[in-house]
Image (tube, rainbow, N blue to C red):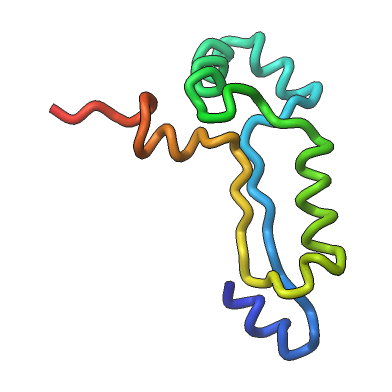
Length: 97
């Protein structure tokens, strides 16, 4: 956010995209690897119930770079299908004793 303030003085907008599990060749390897079961569980329990696609990440980038995103700056777009929300508030939340 600080850089959005600094660069905004020069007319730039600074944003970030923080994707979760996006189906790429590397993600496919991870899903079938030793940690795959945990990743598949995260995806299944998430509100979206699926992994994302590169095109979906690109669509957020298109929004941010295009005229419809002209008033967006200093933001981080978490696009993980709700995995983080499920971790804090749903079935993925750590159990407290």
